[in-house]
Image (tube, rainbow, N blue to C red; front, side, top):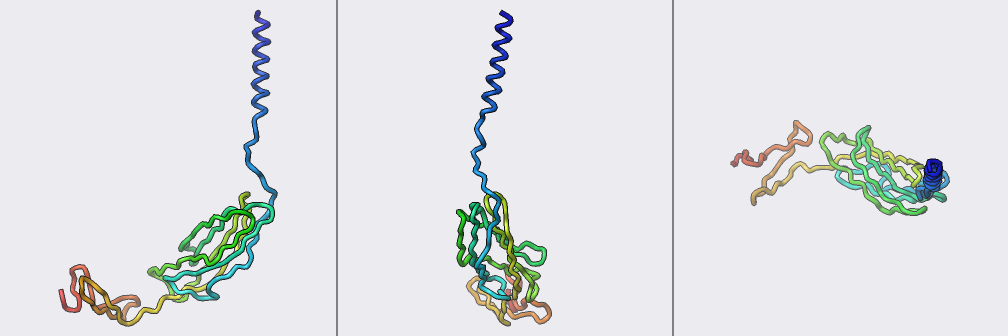
Length: 181
């Protein structure tokens, strides 16, 4: 009886090992190594784009052997990341037409600020290729006089000669506005 129990346990153990070794693959399709190709890259500007505007680009991405995954787009000024976006790309050939990147008008923006757009195409296996476009951001031209519409009134604001981007002649939210309360 003891021999039958040991034999039964041995057969049970071998069966469990055999079943465990026959487990299915993870089902993931693997593709051969290949790298995406970026072509026909065009931008809406050649060198300068004003802040508070958009920079548009068109691009074709191709990978003959591996499906594409994403196109990562980054807008940088120096080492500062200004904006980024991820565009889903499906298949092996993708055309992106007139995609816009907004360039914010922020405090401290220098006139003719150097900037770059970095495009990184990535396939499903993680291979990637990067292209960079360098350009300059210009400050928008602001007139000498601005008119503020506030509480049904129109208040004239003139540019302060002492500070760039500073305005005098009006303070709002309960303060004096050109001699009026």
